Length: 61
Picture 1 (cartoon, rainbow, N blue to C red):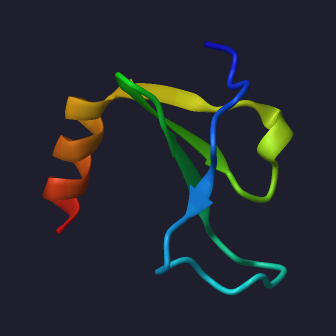
Picture 2: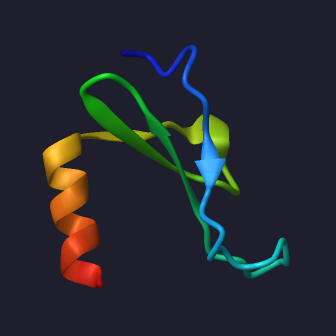
């Protein structure tokens, strides 16, 4: 998957758009979650299986 056609969104918990904001965007596909830096959206993205993404979020809660 090259990232075409993905719909990206930011978390409602993201920092405001400031010079030092830290935010990622995610996009969901049928089997994967794609993650990218919101300040550099054309720099590429990381893709992980939904199960791995859910495990990461669960461990952070």
